[in-house]
Image 1 (cartoon, rainbow, N blue to C red):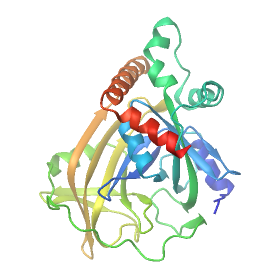
Image 2 (image 1 turned 90 degrees about the vertical axis):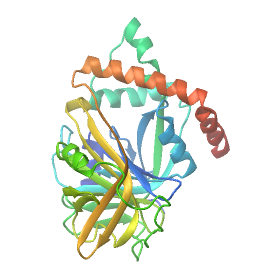
Image 3 (image 1 turned 45 degrees about the horizontal axis):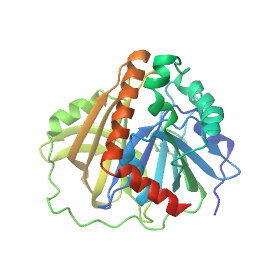
Image 4 (image 1 turned 180 degrees about the vertical axis):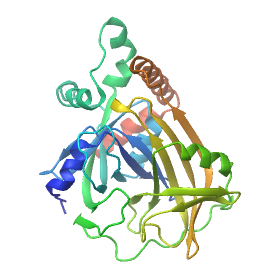
Length: 322
């Protein structure tokens, strides 16, 4: 089934500067991270997309292994559309590991310039940003379904385009061998998350596709973070889940993010998220410093992917899919 969507959804897909992408982990959980979709979508073909750096190969390897992904269009700030609406896209991802140079220059380049600002060029910048700009990996998502809520908090009645949602909520998962208790300092995590504007939580849905929903962290204790969401968004029981808190400035400068994996417990008393891992970063607000950092990270990531065999595994997977 090819999903089609109305103009009110398309305006969100066209306008948002960032989106949350979630993918499934080998243990059956879900990780959510922020990407720049730069308006990539094809209504006739029923696809949406985003790009990432080949240096960020771990994310690509996870998606290549399990292509069921979700994209959450949840933030209007600094974008090109100021209207309401939260859009959840679920579908199957296809990675183009070695895209056509003409596509990169004529399609992705102008799009990136519009959303992220004009690229720097010249002898130094062309060499420094080679991996960041040229080793871009387009990820195309064949849309299985889109869910539109009328507001970004998902508190109104939703509309579904494409395949209907599963009739039943996902069942509880068996707890991890290490137990479900929090493994990081929850009070510190609450403080860090509280400084950021957007918080997303992702878990694997009943049909295997990630579900990404907006949540609010209302407090913390030794057992975990107290979270709340609109009614019906968080299924009862226990399950692995990922959490992303992030913020950004215009053209995605000054990005700040906190990312967790952990265990979500939901019952009639409320929801508790016990984080098991944490990582975070804050990017420079200055464009020049940001590009210097991006270039360095892309170079390091690519070299690491070559050393540990990740790049060859991705190439093998790409040849098998082709």
